[in-house]
Each structure stands twice: as C-alpha cells, then as structure tokens.
Image (cartoon, rainbow, N blue to C red):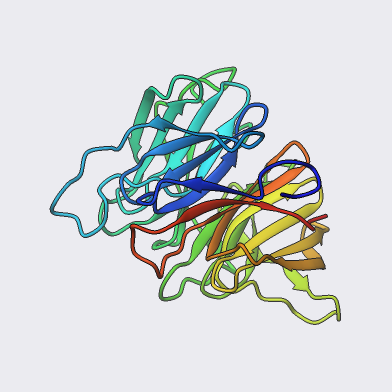
Length: 294
C-alpha cells in the first residue's frame, strides 16, 4: 500500500474489459466496460466497487459489443457522467448519482466509427472518433449545462493527418475553449480550435528532442501539466505545456501497469486503468493508484 494509505490496486470483475476511467464526486471514480457498457463506481479510499450502470443490450450482428463504454468524462456542475460509445457511434449520458440513463445521441455511423473519448466544456461535450477525421460537439441546450438536443459534426482540418488504424483519441480542453487531441497512430499531439483547425504541438523530451507519444490514449490536463497515457508502452508521459509546445517533465511506468489506457485524478492522487487488450477475459483487471507523478 502506498504511503498515503490508499489501496495501490483495486480489482474489477474478471469479465470487465475496462478502458475508460474518470474522477467523480469526492473520493469516487467511474470505470467503464468495453464488453457491454457497464459502469462501475469505485471508492478509492476503501477499494470498494459497485455496479453503477448495468450491461446494455447486445446486437448479435455487430462484431464488437453493441454498446461498449470507452472514454468517460464527468460534469461536476450537473453530476452527469458522459460515455463514448465506440463502434456504436453513440454518446450517452447517465446520472452520476443514480446511474439512470438520461439520453443517447447517435453522433456517428454505427459499425464504421469508433467514438473514443470525451471532455466537458463550457460550450458542451466534445467527442472524438478514431476512424474519421472529425469530432463532435453536443452543445448545451440552455444555461446551466442543460442536456443537448442536437450535435455538430466538425471536420479536422489544416495540419491534421488521418492515417490507418486509430487516429483521434484522447481529448482535453484548455481554458480558452480550444482543445488538445492526441493521434494514437502517429504519436502527434494536436491543438484544435472549435472550428476544427488543427495544428501540431511540438513536444520535446528531457534532451530537447522531438517526443512522439505513440499509442497515445487518454489524456489529462491539470493546469499547464498534461498527462498522456501510452497504452502500448505502459507509460504515462508528463509535459509542461505552453499551448503549442510541451516540454517533458518525466515519463512514468509502474510494475502494476498492464496496457494502461486512461488516467484520472481524485484529489491529489492519480489512477490508471489496465485494459489488458492482449488477454481475453476472464482475467484480472485493476485500477492502479499511480505514484511518482508530479
């Protein structure tokens, strides 16, 4: 157990197939299932795990789970949990306290899309699509983050380079309303305007050389510090950001990482989730309390 007394690892069900994790209220985290869309609510102080959202219906005609839960984001103003629906093309909203489904938006074509991650902003909720050079905004329908009644499709333009495999993945919002989006296959971090104009961010390592974050997955922006998970390397790269540039502070690994995909912060503690893509269920899945991050 780490010196702070919180559990170092927290076990999830052995059929969980987790991918996304996000901080909720107080000491709680949410984690979601690629297998069937279940959501768990996790008390990081005790390690207790409760099913918050039950499995969603399966469409046997789809090669993957019909309604998986991929990237998650949480709106503290409304206590709403937002879920990226992967190949379903869906964005979903759940009550963060009761687990009740509040809405589903079909924002991308089912089967040919991969709605991967999301972020809550003053403008609405943004979602990435790893299989298309576009992203989505569900704008608030009124004051106070009221549930959207429409969505906008925004083309990624200018310096954005679409490639084979997974493209747009993790997304974060800056204070001025612009965004960071990491490109998994190329390892490039982009600064993206709400219009879709994308420009490459110059990331450098401790030696001042270019740093490509290959297999970049979930990202977390905390002030000017950006954390990027690289699931293929079991590492989290940490950068000091100046909007269009980022300087490596350190890159962290952990013996408990096993294809760590996303990162969340609860109070002053960091957590990652092990997806274990290469190991089919049933197997052990864990949330990892990450130490050594600035």
